[in-house]
Image 1 (cartoon, one colour):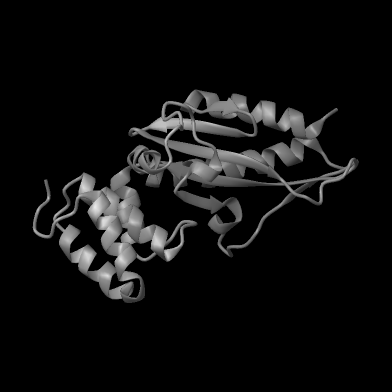
Image 2 (tube, rainbow, N blue to C red):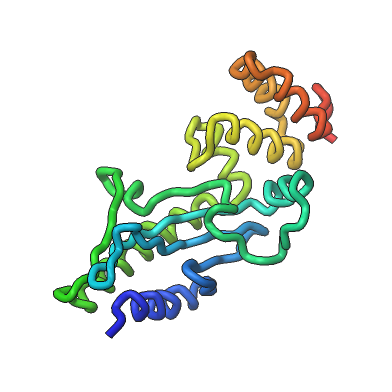
Length: 206
C-alpha cells in the first residue's frame, strides 16, 4: 500500500465538495477572482522506506498576478498557480498554537487511519479556514497593512499593497505611499520608478 499516494487521493475526495481541484502535488480553489492553494511538500530527507511531508498554503491574487505578467509576459493567467506563484504563503505548522514546522512521517509502522485522520483535521480545521479568511484582495490588504508579510519580503509587501490599493482606488493610497517612501529612503529611486510604472500620481485615484 502506497500510503502517501492514497492519502493524496483521499485528500482530493475530501476537498472536492468544497470546490478544490487536484493538480500535481497541490489542490487549488478559484474564489473571489483569486486562487487558494493547498500544497503537499515532500522533504529532501525522504527515502525509499521513510516519507516525510508537510503542507503549505498559498493565495494568489489575480490582480497581482496580472501585474507581474506585464513585467514577465508569457504566463497563462487562466491556469491554476502553483505555490511559488502565490503572493501569500504559509506553512501549516504556523497555524498551530505554538507555531513551527510540522512534518508527518510515513514508515513501515504507520497506521493509515491515524495518519489520514490527523492530516484531514489539519486541512479542514486549519488550512481551509485560513485560505477562506484571506482569499479576497481586501483581506490581503488588511493582512499586509497590519505589518504581516505572509512569505513576502518587506519590499514585496510594499509593492503588492501599492498595486492593490491603486487598482481599487483606496482612500489610504496616498498615505500608504508616503509611508513606503519614508521606509525605503535608501531605495527611493526604485520606489519612484515602480510608482511611475504603476501610473501613480499623488492625490489621484483614477
